[in-house]
Amino acid sequence: MRGIVASPLPVPYKRNAKIIPGLLANPFNCHFSPSLPSIHHRSPPAFSLTNVTNFHSHIHSGSCTFRLPRHKPCQPIRSLSSQPSHRLDFSPPGRPKPTKSTTQTQRLNYSTISLASSSLSRNHPHDTRGLSQSSKMAGPSDSMRRKHKVTVVGSGNWGTTVAKLVAENTKEHSDIFEEDVQMWVYEENVTIPSDSPHHAAVGDKPQKLTEVINTYHENVKYLPKIPLPSNVVANPSLVDAVKDSSILIFNLPHEFIGNVCKQIKGQILPYARGVSCIKGVTVTEDKVELICEYISESLGIYCGALSGANIANEIANELWCETTIAYNTPPCDRQGENGSNGTNGEHRDARGQISKTELTPLPQEYHPLDHAELRKLFDRPYFTVSMVSDVVGVSLAGALKNIVALACGFIEGHGWNMTAKTAVMRRGMLETIQFCQEFFPETIQEMTFFESAGWSDMIVSCTSARNWRYSKMAVERGVSLYEVERTELNGQKLQGISTTKEVMSFLKARGVQDKYPLFKAVEGIVDGTFEVKDIPVLFRQ
Ligand SMILES: NC(=O)c1ccc[n+]([C@@H]2O[C@H](COP(=O)([O-])OP(=O)(O)OC[C@H]3O[C@@H](n4cnc5c(N)ncnc54)[C@H](O)[C@@H]3O)[C@@H](O)[C@H]2O)c1
Ligand SMILES: O=P(O)(O)OC[C@H](O)CO
Image (cartoon, rainbow, N blue to C red; front, side, top):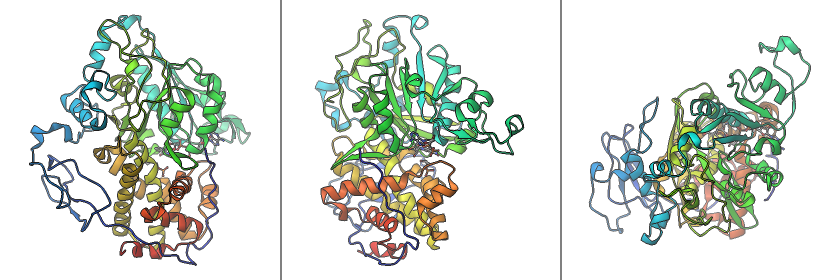
């Protein structure tokens, strides 16, 4: 995996302006209402950046219509009731509807186009209909089943927040999960802040972060002032933290995942399953890989992806939001009615191909692990989980929005406001979708961009998350992003710079960087070869 080699952002972000050619116009006309009570569509929207003209969107009440470019044939408009699979599922704050609702199942089926051949349907990796029921009918009774042990690998701002909510759920579902949740902490010495109630006990004497967490049940450095459940167990040993865990939740800045995987390869249960909450990509020479795929291949396990419009501090304070989990239960984890696993360890990768990684089936003595169980692990009254199958859309939307968030910070730091930012968000989303279509055409499902992992994350990231906030600050202060990260973030990481560098190095290796003018401009601004003031020029070409 390539390291992060972003050169420091030169002070002014301006001189030597280079005009970058060719932002493309837009592919679809979209009308939508904020409440989206129904959707009428002519066909799944085509988001291609080619053949596109006159993008415009406006809000009106009552419906959302995707209009294809004129030359494309349209199917008859069907009402929501006759086409529930396209329905956007808005659960109100509080407990979500039962997992196996018709809507949910049918919506999941929409995300199956590339693999939905009849010969595959029996072990269709995306089809979860009735799975829990059959799983529960088969094999040992629930009370006899082995519980899943859960480890969160990472303990930053988001890692600690996810450990908190997962630990609340393991307690609540202690029939399925072991109550204690291991949380691997990259050990460091911390000083307890003077305004903390724990300060009096130790003063300014440096303490080990793991000991502080386990004593005071608070991550004073990365998630201060949030009480953690006592069943979150901080562990400074990575190998010990993952030992015997059947569920591994990866949650650390993406630049560290390579080293983590190296350390735990061969040290985990062969049938462990993963969920990556990491927003980023890995690039090796001219190959781009999803983080969850990288984890799968490095460790020989299946790994899904969690991503959404999620500001850790808000969720830690139990302010409601939603998220998206993409998980394709491997066929070998589906227990048949006779209690036997469905197949050998074959499963499909993010490109829809048979994966080179042969999985070890999850033993039947365990509770099955599918959408229903994952929802039990992650869903909270303040954290509504939507389960989908599109790992590509969920992973890449989560990674690429960080590039766009930097652009929006630059824009605002320059003095422009919300209207300019929405223009940049729109362009950024088009390039994101183009990227997915160009490099993962086999499996990408455009409806994913209407999940929390899609547009919602784009909006929140460009208006209130760290990559936006600190790139704005860097421009306002005329200092580099690295400088701001070092002085303002107290050890937290901005994922946008490294993602920009990695994505651009991949695009350049392919010779297609000019097809992504906004991404290219962000790299130019970071490197000092493009001026923020010239961003509008991109929109005129
Ligand atoms: N913070 C959020 O609001 C949020 C929300 C959603 C997703 N995410 C994503 O979650 C992932 C994790 O981010 P975060 O916010 O928890 O992290 P963070 O930026 O808050 O913290 C940095 C973490 O990296 C660890 N670290 C430092 N050096 C390390 C090393 N050499 N090896 C391993 N770990 C090291 C630190 O101990 C710390 O836990 C990122 O991909 C991020 O984009 C973050
Ligand atoms: O704070 P950021 O910029 O890392 O973004 C946090 C989340 O990804 C927003 O959904």
